[in-house]
Figure (cartoon, rainbow, N blue to C red):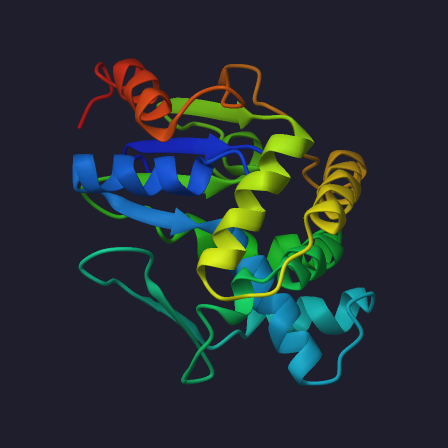
Length: 225
């Protein structure tokens, strides 16, 4: 595994870890890994090829051969390309999130994506956003964070994001989906959702992005760059 500096930011969906991770990566001028996108892409590719999300072997093989790339843009999230087609918005729907949690329970999928994720660690350093970055993918990371927030707050945040993107959303449905996904993520056999033993835990329920970012950054001052 790479000895390059790595900072991991884990947590369930809707806690702000993606935004915080990207802000931190830009601040440090480091690389950024959105590991959740890889699982969403795997699920999307499976649906498009008519592969059942519950078929562990088939989905695992698909994950190992994904033709995907991320194209950075000046502002905002990177463009996501799957099989030479942009799918940036396709993988950000509520259904895509649900599908991702279904394929993520398969050990075959997690094994197939493990090295792909580790390969993102390149000079000068990496900020990795996910659910098992600090526990499984980068257990030797220099700094680990685990963000949390109530299911209701997270659903409200997700609802706002989807509406702003012009996508359909139902708040009550989002709350239920988030709670069900949390249950799957916490109880899966492969890399269950939990903070690393040495992770810094931050509840973002009542905090704005600026406050959370400042807190995270303060804990990163002694990370060797």
